[in-house]
Image (cartoon, rainbow, N blue to C red; front, side, top):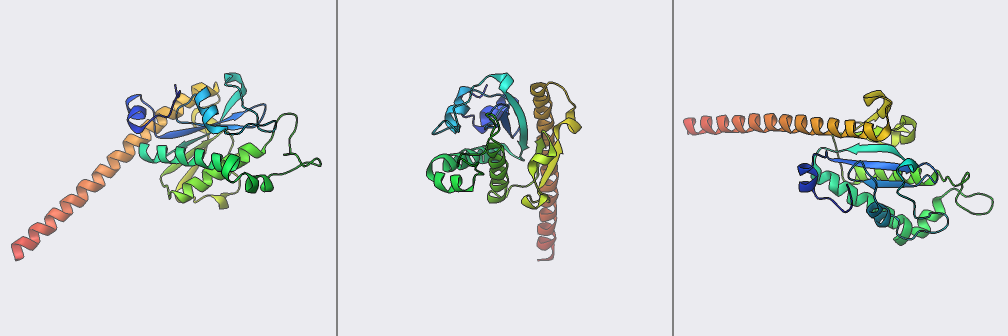
Length: 222
């Protein structure tokens, strides 16, 4: 369980893929980032810096959370880097750049963040925007994002489709219980990571062989 930050060694040793899980609260629309397919009090305390009546500290009750997206990257180092970046952007929206973030949020006639019941779609929209920004800023490639629904990603113009592949969860692993589905996506991530490493190894060995051949030829003609 993700009761604290997990480093690359721990993630590898415990059978997790280089992924980041985005969970959406069904009541409030709030989003939590996790390095594993679980939500704990640790992530909530880490990612809700200054809770207030519009952005309350959410519960960890499992029935209140639904997987919104799974970000899959090509290495564990990049996955932890992207996780830190997402949490940092959350801090900026809530603390250091709060006034700027507030100015961009849709308001109702009472100047409150727009809502329906307790639900505020602003939170998931901002999480999607921050996800796109992190991929661009870190120049990440060979990225896959599994979405609960493809419409959530927004317009394709916000993504570099040469580096990012968008998939819909139901089309990949079926419509089973959501936390069971996340384990299937974890396994897919491990398979993809293994295949990518094998491809890199083949390319590296071919390059080394070519360099050795060129060096041998140069020596023979010297």
